[in-house]
Amino acid sequence: MGEALAGTHPGTADPVKGVSAAAAHAAGLDARWLGRVPYAEALELQQHTVAQRRAREIEDTLLLLEHPHVITLGTSANPDHVLLDETDRRLLGIDVHDVGRGGDVTYHGPGQLVGYPILALEEGRRDLHAYVRGIEEALIRCVADFGVTATRRPGRTGVWVQTDKIAAIGVRVSSGWITSHGFALNVNTDLSFFAAIVPCGIRDGGVTSLALCTGRAVDLEDVATSVAGHVADVFGRTRSDPAKTSRKT
Image (tube, rainbow, N blue to C red):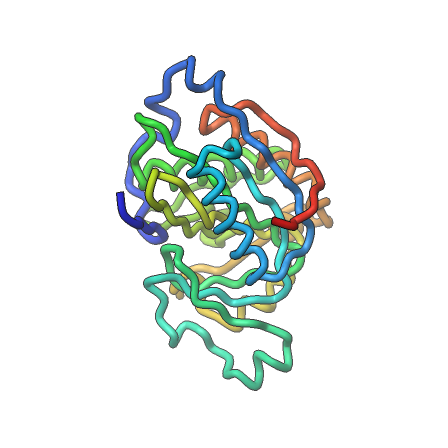
């Protein structure tokens, strides 16, 4: 299969259907907590990890991290959805990257949990829309662990608390049905930085975070542990708590 992208229309497929019990028990998930990683470095690490997974040198892997301030533009991005000019972005320390994921414009920054699942999708799971819905399901279960009720929003990708987006999703599936890119969950994110963009090109909704919803700061590594378990459960992998690891490739 060639490159496939997703980021705007998740479809309605069941994310937890179609995998045999044998496959579910056989597959593991190596979850890694990397701390704060510059975007370009994380992109290079993703590419290296995808190549390793395609060559069957490693098992399925979930890279968990946070980024310094950065705006990323997906394959369907409208440049007009970046609202600050280069001078203003430089003053705020915000980088900009064009990336090979689906979707529009997204902001990443400190206090936001970013996850890059590098999964080899097996027979029965080779449905891009179902994969995106599976990521949404894992994130909905994760925020519920912290007392927050989140849902999907018809016709929109991501995870929402009423009309405010708490998690954005933009993924890529390449040859061999290997996934990359992934999700960004606002945990303790400074939401004022979202004023720099039209988030995901959506003007009729706001953004929120776990900290805002719960009224307290939430430990990012606790959220990483929660989301790793739920990604494993939804995709039929053996659960793994994120291990702190070097990001050297």
